Length: 610
Image (tube, rainbow, N blue to C red):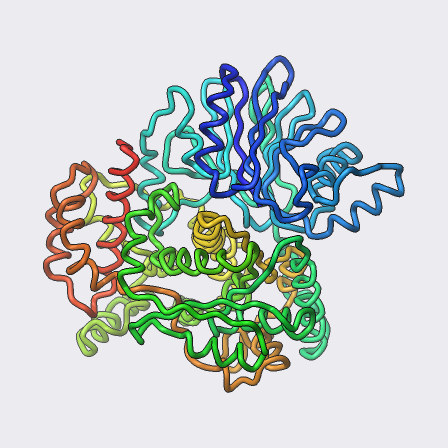
């Protein structure tokens, strides 16, 4: 795992590439390097920071050249040994046993078609002398930003590297600002600054003197939805085999490996298979909190005891989380709402003290219907056929009878409105909070809802597919990447192996969710390894008491940054009213206030402007 950065068609400046890579030294503290490249008559530099995982010698130094190809690469190709054997049969010789050299040789042999052979998580830049290519893995596990303006291109693993560019303007992209305020993150290809973008999952960006071109080498094939024809037991056996194979691939390393173990279904499954099938001395890690409302560490300890892992639990106080709060803009680079970035950063820091690589269970919720909201949206799709004027009247009656706790779904015109109601800003609050109105419907999330509905997906499938494409990539995986790499820890996600994902896509909905049980088949698989009594309980989540902080520990920060700040787009009087009237049971207010505070904190630290 590493950090990459570079530019082309800027003035060649060795100090510039050093500044760009120094900004992301936490992603690669073991080695640094840079190399000049040419693309047609354009010149530039590739830079690299290395976190040594495979082949700890200098043979793994980057940027790496082979034939006409120069590569700077971040990630892991888990099947590189198999590809290496294929290349050796063609006469290739190798000087290392790292996957970077296999990547270079694969490009030399097959060109960009080589990407189809790679199983892994990766983001890399490659140059063949004519063009520069930016490539991101199929799922979007590893990040890659780029800047394109006035015929010049720059790229980096994190946005702060691009801020080093000469003449870079920290001017806020207004569309990205509103998207953050709606959803709490900015989805690819968007980025918070003008002229900045993210490479999308499964995408190749190519740059040459002729301009910028985009293509996709992978998308989840929706036409194969529900195509699995075997029995439930057949599906379980195949899932078992594929999960074990995915975990086995991700245990290849020349440095110590452990697993995150929260005690939930996904992390317990990954830890159990890693421990029982491959390594009985697996190290597992969890954090707990003094506040029992947020503490699940005892569950993790029970599972670790059953598995016989070398387990470490660290109990944290709220002040430990609060100490990280000022660092959020530096860790994330962009405005980022998800408060679980705080405990994830703590867990990563503690884990890094013991290992360099950790496996996580991310992806289980999105691909196996794990979130409660999926059931709610399913209910909405069932009532959507009732004429709106009838539903609206019924909603008002139910709202009056239940003090606003029920009946909300009845009041929406369509599924898009129902979806937006679960965002940070429901439409009515969104219109009240901002002085300048903005149309939220052009965002990719809404376009995808319409696309998925046209594909005839069931009510159960609609939101999971949307989350897989956006929320999982731009919130969950972004959080894990930034939090872990801030501590120079590589995190691997076996439940997001693309071959496994393609298989899950073929399973019928009634195997993923059955008899009122979300994640049905995943729970059935886990029961083969860990008794259900150790993990079958309501999901708590990985969060912190941010609602309480807003009126206490973060009160002064909120008043300074938000209530007396100078954001021309925020209606401060309305925000002040929400903050003044905020109560412990008003979750929507907490989310709105937290989102605005984090944005203003980011804007001040970055000196960004509208």
